[in-house]
Length: 130
Image (tube, rainbow, N blue to C red; front, top):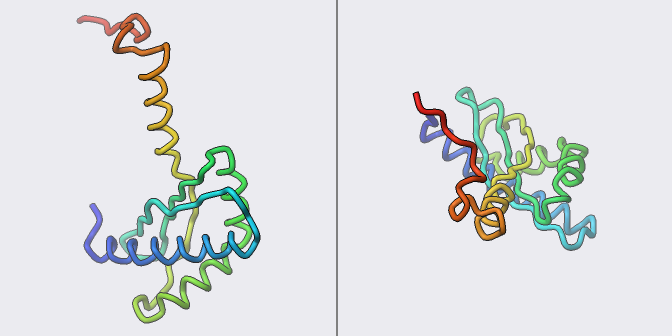
């Protein structure tokens, strides 16, 4: 269960990390890739923040994650400059790809496609009755 303080810090970091990453992508001249920070969860001692990014198109996710990790310290520094009036200590940032949108998209395609388990229940494994 997250405390209000963790949620507030997560919200501040989410906005600032998103701004910094999007600015870095623009400066690098990257075209056609959309990166958004979907969630930031902060540990109870406020020392580590997990940053979840959603990347579109999905197949660019690994590449973007590698590039973000390569400039991790610069991102942390820029975010620290923005949050210095709100945070005493800048948490360590860890980056992850949030594939929940892709997962939802796959479910949507499965339901709309030929293999619709709602119309053809034989596609689903049978539950064993006890």
